[in-house]
Length: 175
Image 1 (tube, rainbow, N blue to C red):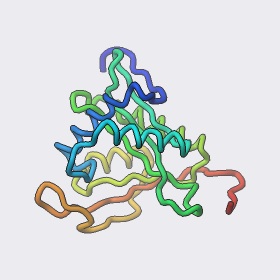
Image 2 (cartoon, helix red, strand yellow):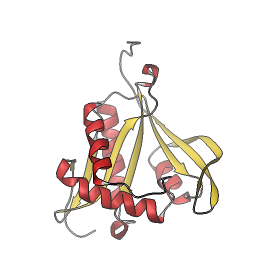
Image 3 (cartoon, one colour):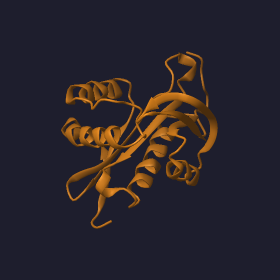
Image 4 (tube, rainbow, N blue to C red):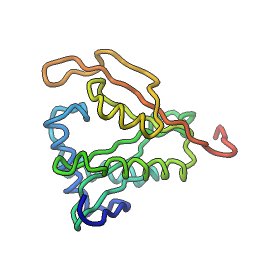
């Protein structure tokens, strides 16, 4: 990786770059189980939802260019799940394999601790052994494997859930 990488909170100005990353991932990988590219309006709506829920969205910037992003969002909607979050990390195709994903994931883990989450979850296609190993290197363990839950690129897909247990809140509540 050449130059200094900056990890910072995303802004609305970053959404076109985030959208380009997301749409490349949708078109060419199984990292996002979606068929159609997203629109800028959909990304803007997602971003507003993240901000309204106080969920972090961060970007990795290199040479003034957004080269990756990460986020944490709601794992499930019922209140009892409020101490769990689901994360996502995606890196621009030209910058994969350079350590950017690890820097983003470590920053998200710090954000999860700041939010006093107890559990951080990642959903990964079972064929993405690189991502499974990547998460394991960061302390995540496989906690579930769901067979044939999605269909993309002409085949049935299995989804692996990996989980990182964090300290969580000192005094959790049921409010």
